[in-house]
Structures are given as C-alpha cells and as structure tokens.
Amino acid sequence: MTWQLAQINVARLHAPLDDPRTQGFVDGLQRVNALADEAPGFVWRLQTESGDATEIQAFDDELVIVNMSVWDSVEALGDFVYRSGHVEFLRRKREWFERYGSVQVALWWVPAGSLPTVGEGVARLATLEANGPTADVFTFRRPAPAPGAPPAVRPGRGGRR
Image (cartoon, rainbow, N blue to C red; front, side, top):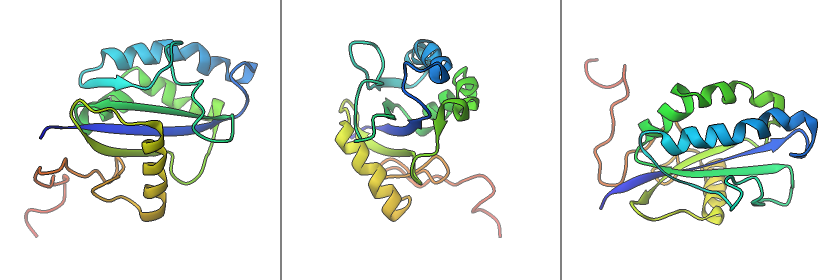
C-alpha cells in the first residue's frame, strides 16, 4: 500500500476575521493557498466553496481556525512550510494568532487517495497532546516513517559511535 502524509494545524486568532487586526492574514490567504496548490508533493487541502477553511468550526471557540492538507511526504510538506513563500506568512503569525493549547500541529499517514476528516484531525491532535509523538501521530521534529517503510536515520545520529 502507498501512503501519503496528512496534517492538521490549529490556531486561535487575536480577533475575528473581519477585524482590522487580522486583515493581513485574510489578505494573504488566497496567495498562500495558491502556493500550496502549486507546491511539489501537494495532494489536497481542506476548503469550503470560498476556497479556504476559515468557515469550518472544529472547536467551540469561534476564533480557533483549522487547516488540513495531504502531501506526498514529510519532506514535501516541510519544503512548502519552511522553504517557500509560505515562510513569509509563517513569520508573521504572532501578529494574527495567539498560542492555542500545547499542540498546534499533528502529522500522520493515510492510505494514498483517502482524505482525512476534521474529526479525525482533531482526534490526532488530542492523541499527540496526550501521548507525544508515536508511529500513529507525530511532528516535524519527530517524524515517523510511513507504515512498512524502514526507519529514517536522522543526520548526526546512528552510524559510528
């Protein structure tokens, strides 16, 4: 079976989306989503007819927004997040968001062609918060190989002693 990487990330806005304090975030959404759609390894992202996921309420708090996507690999997602135009947006996150909980991002493997649900993503966040990174849900810092794949050797680890 072939696997793809699912991710969820959540954040709590400082103010509602129609507030001037979040205008920079709102103004950049279309551009960032277009960057994702064109990124190598991109498969899918959660969105409504408006083209983004800001209207989807996964939590009782209306200021908490959710983003989910599927990628070919951890590397493809990492390249988009940290080595594309998205990083400019990421650098400004403190302007628009406050810290929300202890876990904001969760990664996990899904069978190729299947799409995760918001409920599944929320459950993965809770599992990661409760148990830390495992083979079933993990982070960029502690990635897990796809099921059936050999464990990756992180640079500077393993090898000679």
